[in-house]
Length: 189
Image (cartoon, rainbow, N blue to C red; front, side, top):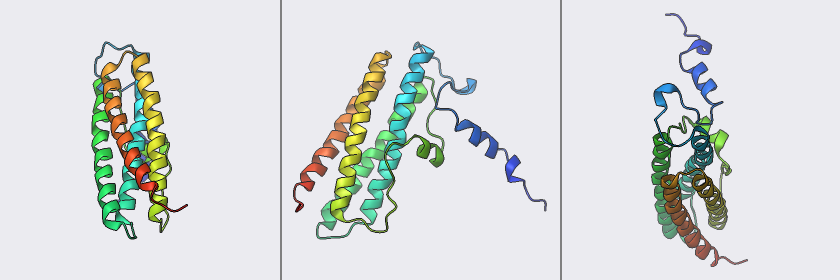
């Protein structure tokens, strides 16, 4: 049986070339018609795709903390992190499908996520509950700021449906911030 040359496999070259794309313009087969101008679609796609990447990254970090939590408030934080991770995960498909509806493309792989994400991963072997709360609070605040910027971009580019979705997601992000902030007030300084 002959070995397949990985450098010429059908997916290896295509996927590396696609990473250069930031989601616009889409390939003709994926170019959904819209009344938005091409530059408007491009601006929206470039504002929203990093939010999707950050949602994947924050989802993973929140689940990491959910799985690796230890301490006296284990049950409460374990349940809270799971609830927050689920809400973050649910937000991803909504935005990705919106990008597609206006003629853009979105996240294709883990490496694509890593190229676009603006929040850092956490690969530490152990993180205290207090540090988990602080990291999630900071990340959610960062995402909220980026959501506000993306809302302005979508409004400036005549895309009120995407703006409306982002406003709903910002409200959910602010709810997570509120819970994490209130929990952080119980820690000794």
